[in-house]
Image 1 (cartoon, rainbow, N blue to C red):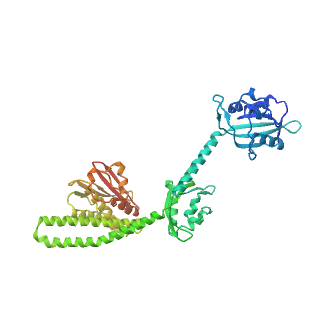
Image 2: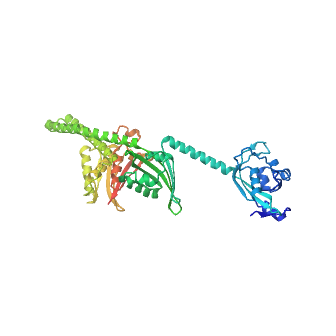
Image 3: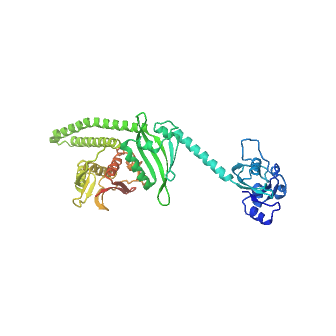
Length: 493
């Protein structure tokens, strides 16, 4: 019901209505003039007006109303008229009304929110309208900037083939860009539930990948995985999902935001590359085996001659064949690893005995370094003996390659917090701090003048890392440039 208001306004009404409101104006319901009866200081300040100029004037004499648009219902004239006709309060959430700067004379774009409350006179008809306004220019500009930013982001995502999603767990609201449906093989305007795409289209053998990724995201906040999906035409496609899990103060997941992109061609290229590496490496093994056999036959035939030059050349040739064989085995393991075909053959064995065997094998091909290993005795672990031997051999060969002749290489094996820790320390060139994590990346080679002539493709430490991770362990390095390095790996005891 509209409030009652007498024609003569007591001081108390002014104090309550005007002095304590954000910006209020009292107009008389004498359409079409709507004479201004009173205005508080806040209203005068935000509209750059003075009381002397506006009191007693018609509202539209002071604030001209642009009422040319018939579809615009937010204009003051239409609003005031409706309040008088209906006797109901009318709110206008947002409208634009530019004001003139008294100093420069320029008009400034401004946005407002207003409330129009009717007050009845003694005859029961609307006598006055209380027009209360609040400036919301900042909020409107911020909203427009956010919309513009969102549109730019969406256009950029569309241009790069990304689909985006925003999943609110609390309200079960899922906002997805149209590209998401297309990445699952459906028209862009399709409405698909997460059950439709993630439970019905993801291959059964990849379902666990999603569950594992979510559990990992609850720990780290990063949501990332690759899965294969079946399109309606039965073709298989790879999708890469990356996102951010948002949690509240109680560590409860409340929201997930992220992107989805089709990486099918990238995966196919990787498969082709791995197949080529495996095929080429396999084909190279046969002639190398023959060459090694010929060298061994020559060594036996010419051993009785005691020709130092011939023996030295044959030994060096044999070493080069061994290096090539190791590289081929590395590439074969790399292709198996990246195609998911690298299989572990766990067994119970003495890891200290394995370390001794690896050192003996190293010393058969090089006598240039002093290798120190104090065997602490039998220490049984369960793992793939051959693969762990490959890791130890890689650590030892790197220590030889990257340190000067006659320097020490110290090997240790200890137990720490339920883990067996193996370390290999050299007195070599060392590794810069910025390179210490990168040395475990695939094909990464440290840029250092001192080792520019050292051979290798940068896959040994990468393979070692993957092998140890398959054993649920970890690999790391501690190094000081110019002093030396210590490479570690740990596996459960």
